Image 1 (spheres, rainbow, N blue to C red):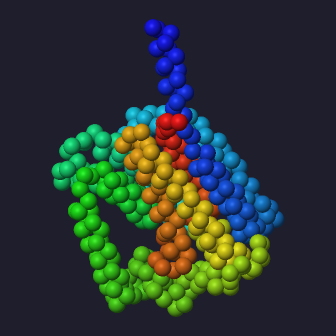
Image 2: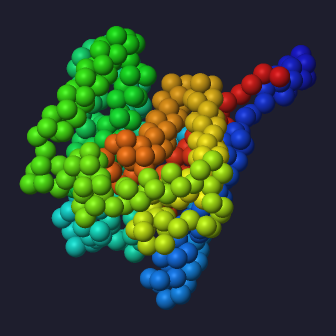
Length: 388
């Protein structure tokens, strides 16, 4: 009898296949490789001018960080994602401490007029860790609340959890765009964890109406003396008339997009990157993609991101428990929202925000923390089991 039971048990184990989303990993690696090609094309002129003729300065640095980040993601994927739930509170608190250090300690580093970086031997932006903190901690709080999620008190507490991190990003690191992304991630996770949809639909509709009213008000009341944030709005509304205040970069980016046509000028043949668009390898790299590869290249990028989001959706849908579903959903929202906001800025649909294009724009901090999120998503995928 014991032997028969053992045989049956082995058959059941064999009938279940442990899943690993190689498609997600491959799509991310493809995006990184494409990003490195475009980064080199967009940055070699600036690198040659500002780094003693080293035209591969940005490319080499980004390539090394990207390789290390991919390996890190694979290592993270080997851990059970429930382990992250145990440390989610610690990560949440750590991100706040690190952001506070940016503002109140001598380790904070100021660059391009903003103090957002922290130097602990390695320079990075703690606000990026705040995104992961919300992605891990809010789902844990939702699960612990259980049936209490129906109450208004639970929603307020969860909004406060996300709001504290968003407040830290805005006040402690002067990063409004990251604060908005953090709050958006928290709101979507609360929506997914709440049993009722109607209150959130009403709240979203109200928010859109409020945004519309705000835009109309700004168009009629904002002037040059309204402050730094208001100046960005002026630049967004009339970039041609605000060239000295940031409109120049926006206008040149639009010129780059318009001059690319359908198939572009060819890889490496962008003219706008030759000091016309400052630091084209950062936030405005999508405009260089459009100029060199045209509409075809832009659509290709969107398709790659679309497939990446689809793989994350697949993992979230098939995760073995609610915690896995919520954290992968948070990662999906983060990446999708960052892509949308970056492209909207380049197209001048919204004011400039300083948001990078994931896996493509230059920036070591962004790649490291994004790949950490991908590693967590792959960890969830390893827990998916399918019957043969």
